[in-house]
Image 1: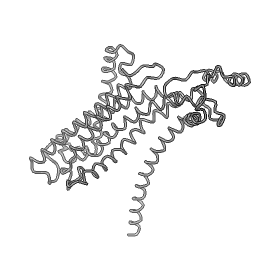
Image 2: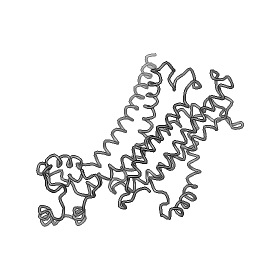
Image 3: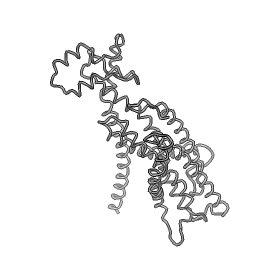
Image 4: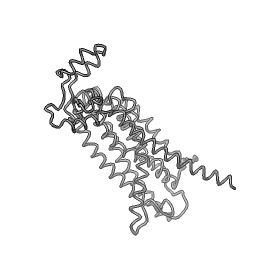
Amino acid sequence: MPYFLAFFSFSRWTKQLKKTFFKIKVASLIYVFFLVLTKQVLVAASLSGCFNKNSSSAVVNMNSSPSNLFSARNEGGKEDGIANKERQVPTNTLKCLNRALENNPMCPSIKCTVEEVEDVKIVLKVLPIFGCTIMLNCCLAQLSTFSVEQAATMNTKIGSLKVPPSSLPFFPVLFILILAPVYDHIIIPFARKATKTEMGVSHLQRIGIGLVLSIVAMAVAAVVEVKRKRVATHSGLLDAEPPLPITFLWIAFQYLFLGSADLFTLAGLLEFFFTEAPSSMRSLATSLSFASLAVGYYLSTAIVSIVNSVTGNTSHRPWLSGPNFNHYQLDRFYWLMCVLSALNFLHYMFWAIKYKYRGTGTTTG
């Protein structure tokens, strides 16, 4: 008995430790991303803004500065590539960061090059796109939680074969395997002919299509849940043990749309980060897609807790609680996710329309 209690307490401790480690890992990834990419640019821009408010020149021209000409003559050992980088002219976007190029006599060691400032500008412009994909991953989290519970109350037989509900996440993988060749060999060639561009569909357009499909998926999931509960009510099986007289293949529709959404968004996001991020930071930038997945799953848990807390404060039972799964108000939760996804898409459109691709100066349109 003491060994059993010790093992039980150790198991609970390890589970809590894993949860804590996951939170720390996600937070650390985001923190390291900011730390590595922004370097000293933000600090230099802030200090230059404080000490050089009355300066007549907001940005020092690297070519005409006497101090830089003097240092260029004396530092003959420097590579030509570095000299060329210093002769670049900063862009007009996020002008406040151009202050990091000023000669700050208080902290001369944190003076930045034009390349460093421009890299930070690119990162800051990419982050809103990253934030808009978190809600999609929050919707994807429902496939391995509530969707599996839905299927567990339904008839999971296909002929004489009984499909375990926990194997349902295989459906989006199957749909992606089918849709990926269709996407590459049919959709993209048609888009290239229609738009007369090499890419056919831009990276941000792919992400936007995925976000729209996630909205449709949540609406379909809500409709399927209404149908499932209607069958349970008409059959008098609300308080009975499963299965209900309805096939679990109805759940496949939400897997189809969310699998398609993941196909468009993940591919577009990886290509977007790879092409838009600075060349020295591409590996770290592409890892943001997996950070979005982690934050989305964590946000799903937070939303469920908030929904139960808010709906439980009234005289009614919380939406996601009850004697059994048939008493859950899951359809309302799915409609809420649909509304949040729609608002997230509008937020995404705001940033995507304003975004200018690196090196081209063109918008997504």
